[in-house]
Amino acid sequence: MSVRVEHLGFSYGAHQVLHDISFEVDEGTLVNVLGPNGTGKSTLFRCILGLNHSYSGKIFVNGKDISKLSIRERAREMSFIPQSHKPVYDYAVLDVVLMSSGAGSGAFFSPKKAHIDRAYEALERVGIGFLAERPYTHISGGEQQLVLIARALAQNASTIIMDEPTSALDYGNTVRVLSCVRQLAEDGFTIIQSTHQPDQAFLYADKTLVLHEGDVLAYGPPKETISAELISKIYGVDVEVNSLYDDKVRVCVPLRELERK
Amino acid sequence: MLFGNVFPIQPFWGDQEAIIFFNVRLPRIVLAMLVGCCLAAAGAAYQGTFQNPLVSPDILGASQGAALGAAIAILLGFTSFGVSVLAFVLAIGTVLLVVLVSQAARGNQVLTVVLAGVMVSSLAAAGVSFAKLVADPADQLPAITYWLMGSLTSASLSDIKMVIVPMVAGLVVLFVLRWRINILTMGDEEASTMGVNTKRLRLIIILAATLITAASVAVTGIIGWVGLVIPHLSRMLIGSDYRKLMPASMLMGASFLLLVDDFSRLLTTAEIPIGILTAFIGAPFFLYLITKQGRR
Image (tube, rainbow over the protein chains, first blue to last red):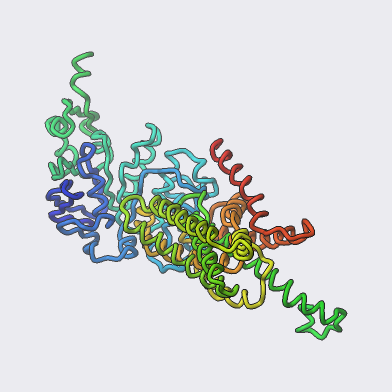
């Protein structure tokens, strides 16, 4: 069991964001967290990552209660891939990847040859080894996102948390990034990722966790979980869920547009 | 002459020249390099921890705090040693106050530190103005004004002895932590998921940078702009990676201040306080920086 959340509750002041969240994630599983804006996806991630402290309930990563781990120990168990953003200073791509290499080490750590090799390896693995020497701010948004994935890989933690990694990317980059993430799950990483697109869950995820108003509405394989009723309930739009290629993939199509055609 | 102490070289210089060299020139050279090194290193460290390329050692109120300390000491008729000590104490005190205020305040820590720094600085500046107002215009007022302009004229061996320990201690801390500053510039939460205790690291870096700033300001008065300009020049030359940027800033700061001090001594027959010269170089550079950033 890679990640286990038990009766998690969290509130910002008087506003209760998460009520009673429980779920378990097996090793090597890609879980897609689905839910409308403001439903607590980011809050859930912040709790798992140890950035929100005053939650109720328990969170275990690789069997360890994260509230009892130090910052350094937590970084050994899991890594985080944020949405790509422009840093204040311009680093070489390799230097950005190297930042995670001291995750489990002491304060006076500085990257050695072995860490640099590992960083190159991580860049090769996501397919952008040729960018290593380029300045991070001069590459495309999709490439930046891949660099951040490589950085998480170089951190050498078995669990990876991603907060809407593709929300700012164009279609091509979205496909490239998600297919890279899918491959990592095949390779044995446990990945929890939030998304706004039900179609992405059908395409890439092993399981879908549906959050609605601070509770788990459904949790299971995408095909069993995502239905027209569920989409209508959480997003307030009526859709038809269609099956393609002998049910290899499914897509959601808004009903209104179908009627218009 | 330097080697004459170690190697058996026949002295071709007189005793008087030796005294001037060892007691006046050499301390001044060493102090100029030390102070330049410290201010530039502190500036680079602050720019990293606050993720803001426009901050400098002055932002945390260290300089103004030191100025207030010096002004009070001069008013009370302390010796130059007493002036340095009080300047040092108040510089540290001001920064502690800024850090405490910013931690008590809610919200974006980076922003609150800068805001608190500006506020506490202006408070200290008001104190300095008041000290000037009540100072004796015949001797105290010129002394305060001259101190505020910053100068290496009075550099002596005892000055160096007083500041060398805190300076070296602070520089060593910044040097060994330099790679971690890279991670800090990505933002607190990201850094934290990469195993960095951001609160503690930031506090240590701020304390070390402030220690060396306060030590510098205490013996030389306010020499502005070095801490802003040098890290930027270094960044242009060798990039943003703090593994290289920190030592480069230290070396360039030391060379820069030594060079400017030579100019301040030789440019005119009377010596120009070095703080004025660094401002003449620094302020236009700052403006250039702003316009360049706007274009990018």
